[in-house]
Amino acid sequence: MGVLDWSILVGTLLFIVGYGVWKTRGSKNVNDYVLGGSEAKWWTIGLSVMATQASAITFLSTPGQAFHDGMGFVQFYFGLPLAMIIICIVFIPIYHRLKVYTAYELLENRFDLKTRTLTAFLFLIQRGLSAGITIYAPSIILSAVLGWDLWTLNIIIGILVIIYTVSGGTKAVSVTQKQQMFIIMAGMFVAFFFILGYLPNDITFSKALKIAGASNKLDILNFDLNTNTRYTFWSGITGGLFLALAYFGTDQSQVQRYLSGKSIRESQMGLIFNGILKIPMQFFILLVGVMVFVFYQYNSSPLNFNPAATNAVMQSPLANDYKILEEGHLELEVEKKMAQNRYSAALDLKEYDATEEAKQDIISINKKERYNRDAAKAMIQKADNNIETNDKDYVFIHFILNYLPKGLVGLLLAVILSAAMSSTASELNALGTITALDLYKRYRISGLTDEHYVKISKLFTLLWGIVAIIIACAANLFDNLIQLVNIIGSIFYGNVLGIFLIAFFFKYIKGNGVFVAAIITQIIVIIGYKYDWMSYLWLNAFGCGLVITLAYILEGFDRLLKKPPIKPEDL
Amino acid sequence: MQDKFDWKKEYTAVLILNVIYIVIFYFIMTLNK
Image (tube, rainbow over all chains, first blue to last red; front, top):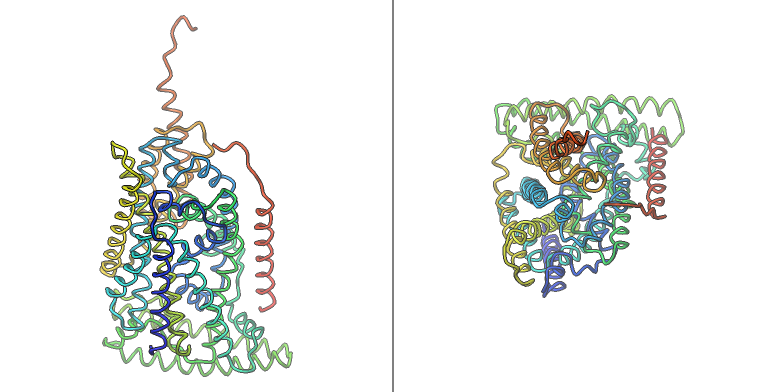
């Protein structure tokens, strides 16, 4: 990285932090600090909601996902627009009518204090862990490719976020997210056009799509009913709907974004904005990955994109075997380039048979390449069992660092760090709010001034920021922590969504029934996960259905027990 | 808690636009096979 890259990276990040602090100085009351004075416009809410969901991993991992497995991942988001509509119709009017600061406050209003406290605790466990991972995930990748110290990176990201989030609360989070989204999208567009520019002269965009299609990278839709296929149209509109409903409707890090709306209408329009733009945005990020794939059809790529993995195997007794594998990979790359040239020429001449022949060659070379990459992964794992062999997170950053010109590398690194900061800021903001309002304020006997609660909210936001940094620094001590956090999310989300759906649609069920049902459900879901009853992605729907069913049955029992005994004179 | 649903034209726009996206995806997929 040169001086220009460093200047752009440091300048961008410091500008965002400085702007966030300056723009939001002097929040005096809880409404200002927690809901940004309830004056956010719909585009601010929309951008804030999108920036919260899009973490650094979205921009590092998604292009790599497209590089290896094509664009089918976009189907995962098919349930999201429908979830946005449901939240606009059902959730937002109720949140606004009850004038709540947190999602869980509504549950006390509808059920009782213990149900509110239970859901707040579930949120704190899950979101507290994931705030650490939101910092750790990009840090581990950047430290591996740039050689930067992991802990230093964790601490820098954490401190930058803490500065403006503690200082300005929700308003600081949303004003900085606007800048961050601008930088993120500008950076991705510039990267996209640079990739197209780097393709050979005869490869136009439409031909690049044909080349990607020949390798099945444009298999966007899959209507397979097999539940073992992870990303299908059906899993997207069912599992994706449940996940989006739980995340956007009940997770305070998202709810707090749209509760800051000036009116119900502004909040709803913010989510509509997300419902319209989310799928095209994910499609575009995947398309960047597909173009990186086309780029590597003509340029050399490593057998495994994770440099730490390659180093591990090269320093092991398997180094010679790995070198042989690399030589085979290089030969395949030459063959692949020739096959792509034949395919391109056949497309120009519109010769159907030659096109098909070249396409079959490409498919066969791709198969061999995949076999080689899998063999490399197996070898790496044998050399070091703890190292991450799945290199999808490293594909895009490898391209950025090795092929983009000076200045742009700094901009793209600013994109990644901005994305990390925008998600972390929403998480810390929500964690601080829940701890201050759902626990601290609710359990204090005497009423204190608004200023006191602002100070306490700031203090808890700071504490959660420190906890997130500690988790990020300790994360590499545990195996598969990222996956663990996703699993914890799926274990809790379904239950919490079910509680909210009961609050909205099942008037018959009261506090005791839902509280006991939620505890039993949580235990059953954890057992279900432990004994592998289903893929963890389906635990959301399972937990949601189970808590509703159990609460209904328990409420029936409760009413039966409370019924006065029938007296003989009543007969 | 919710007595009546208020359907707005923006919701219809979200549904229609997303169906259009899926149709476009289908064409991109089939035209580049």
